[in-house]
Image 1: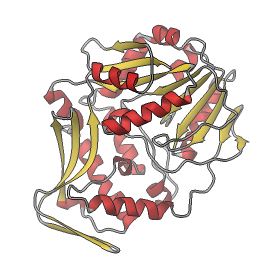
Image 2: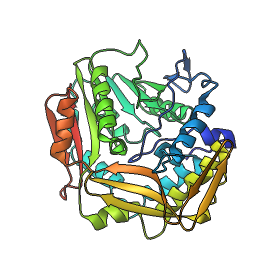
Image 3: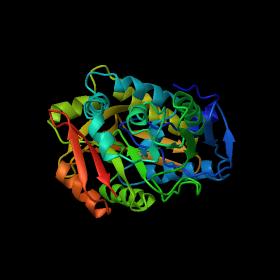
Image 4: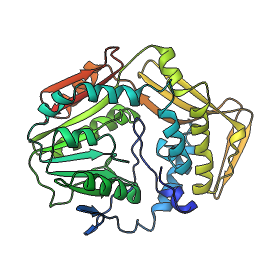
Length: 355
């Protein structure tokens, strides 16, 4: 886990993690610089001066909605990232280890589906650990890691480049939830996108479809997408994964209030709130909320919100797509033939979709 050097950096430099939301901020461009062996790193330039103001405005608008909400990207300050690392090790949290087992069992088939790949592009690359298996089996000429956590990403890509010296490794800081673009010198042909962790499930269906369409446009009709999705399963299994007995997920969810306080200047008191995870069968999604233990008034510069006892703040969704529904979404986004691999319990799927 990266140590964030100061509170300001902790407040604005969010780290993405498997199975949770990638972190949408503005994209950045900069000339390449050398860092660590043969790793070409595209370092981020200074963020727009109004970035913090935009974040404060987003938070304030979300809190003033009839159903108050905080974007799940704000779950991932430095402490949130450390807590999520703990979550992935919990017995109840099946997605990380289930996806890893599928990729290990079917690595040959996945490599065949991605045969001829020249550029492997991981979205939400984080520590670049998941992609290592593909770097070995697919053997791309170039790897591009895309994420918002610039310093963390640079370090991870540099290590990857040192471990795979035959492969050019590059880091790109970008908001890949928007209509971002790769640097112009990234080869156009035989691109393969890798988006693991079922992070696509953190977006509503229209947002997810828009992202998939943009991913398809990046492939220029020549390549594919390897993506992980969490599938529907029994309610006790789902609830336990998002409300574990040790209370780590509850601590993770409550921690967002401290992060919001730093960003917005608000006066949330975590002890006034409790974690809640529930399943919405109509939308086939897990929802995480923070529920007020009693009537609460929250203030911030130029804003105030009264919460009645039992009123909630919506902090995260995690859609559990039926496989047939997600395959239809891929077709609607322009993708062609697909290969699907699942675990024996049908809890998780890894899908390769050809452009």
